[in-house]
Length: 163
Image 1 (cartoon, rainbow, N blue to C red):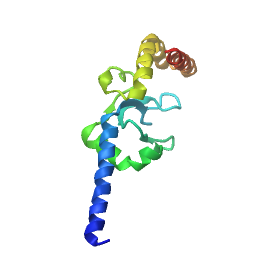
Image 2: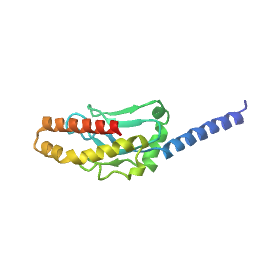
Image 3: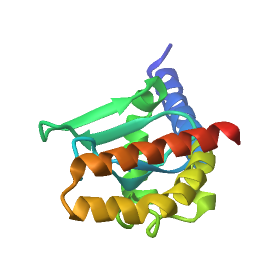
Image 4: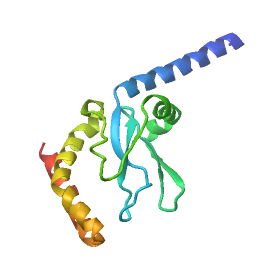
């Protein structure tokens, strides 16, 4: 193959790579995730709405040590440069706190298809538990608030399984 043929082939691969990511991104959506910046107990609180392509997961967060860490699957790793560009320039992340994560949520039609069903259930159940958790946290009763949070997650899991 000549240099021109190599260049055309490489250019075609780049166009294919970008085109596939464009389709994945177009079919993706926002997911409520933990950035690691907010840790009311030991676990990181979900405090950022981050865009994810339809398939592929790539997440960067602050670990317990305070260092930046990443978690991804194969597709997320393969498209991590595109995901980074997408989140920086097109689908910017929405930072929240645990208190206003549902208030600052993007419209439901922009939620990731996989997150959409469970997210609606979680938001519905959160309204029931929110006051109790906040009251216990402000009173410094971390162990009691942890029990309420675990009840919340159990109810979300049970309701999601029945739908």
